[in-house]
Structures are given as C-alpha cells and as structure tokens.
Image (cartoon, rainbow, N blue to C red; front, side, top):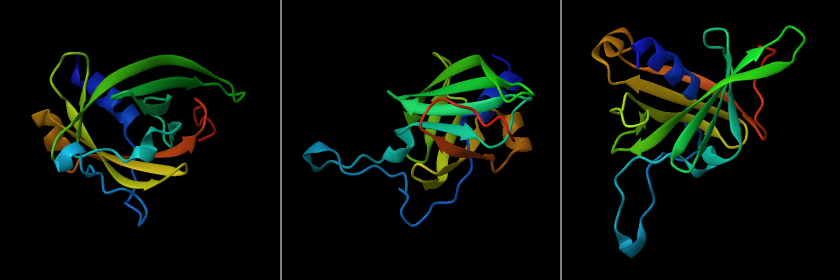
Length: 160
C-alpha cells in the first residue's frame, strides 16, 4: 500500500479534540481478577454512533465508526445539491499498546497510532494520529489532529 494512500486513509480515520473534564483518559480500567491492563484504550463513548469529519480529505467527506475491534472509514462524494454517494470504505484493526491505539490494515504492520485528544460524548471528537513511516514522522513530528462531529446515523458533513 502506498504512503499516499496510508496518509489519506489515516486522515479519514482521525479527528482532533482536547480531553474535557468528563472525557476518559484512554487508560483501561482494571481487568478481571484485579489485573491491570496497561494498554491505552479508546473511551467507551467513541463506540457509539458515527463520527463525521469536519474537513474534507482529497475532496471527499469522511465518516468513522468504531466497533468490534475495528475502525470503519467511510468516504463520500458530496454533490452541489446537498446529496452524497458513498465511494469507499476502509477497515483497520485497532491494536492497543501502552501509549496509543495502533491501526493495522489487513495483515500489514501497524502504520499509525491514534489517541483521543478531546471527547464530548455524542457531540465532538478530536484525535491525534502519528505515523510509523520515518518520512511521515519527519514531515509530521507531532502527528496530525482531526475533528469529528457525532452523528447517530452514517451521514457525512457535505455542507462544509
């Protein structure tokens, strides 16, 4: 998979937010038998509904959903009349590690990591995404932040 595709696909996934007082820190609670899971976990509220990107990537509107240990990244073409068509969907495995959640396409190595920066449940989500590729790390040493708005159904923000 080309890095241009990875960056575009990765961009479709992530969004930018600062942790609010009521948002999860991303650290996992205790596991059964009082064992502590030291892997970063996405807040449970992120798994509810869909998250529509507030900016377009390569002219397409993105929507993300998180479920079943995966993230689903939907891309839409927005028409001048306000209608839209889904043009693609990409799936990535969520791979928690001690500092973030890795994204893995099929059986390839993890190519990036995401962290919640801010979450207001059923309102707004901001994610920071960093990349494994040395060239992308050089260009984006602090990663990228992406903003999303909550949607109860699969619907892009085409009016932006």
